[in-house]
Length: 180
Image (cartoon, rainbow, N blue to C red; front, side, top):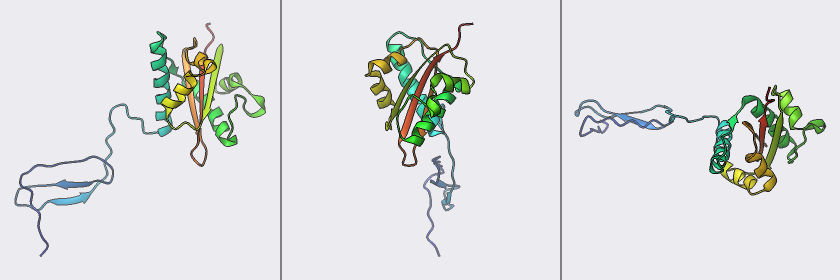
């Protein structure tokens, strides 16, 4: 006869992570039941998509710096992000940092292609940074890149393209729409 396990009290512990053994108990005289279940309970504000999580981390780092300098935060704009993502994917495909895209197109062209009417824009690019905080810190320690971070723009977009061997290529686009 197989050995029976008994719990000393009717306490149930549930750990909610994928693939974790879940133990439940009934009355004290009943054997414990063991089963395998997969639950996923994400904390509030959790972003499942790792690339979106990276975009939000870059935005948060940049807005923390802007707050330290008394500036308004930048808002992630979907069309500006689309332009940034197009260029990040391109950079990852050619494995090279460049501000020009295919056919020598610039950020203004990419913004138009993404459906964003711009009045002013700026762009930062970077590659190989696995940590968004290190990326933003590196940009901030360069006067030209710092000017984009602290510039008079209300919107930003972040793109991250990844090579097959997991090298990230980052693009930050900051932009302002026409005042009319």
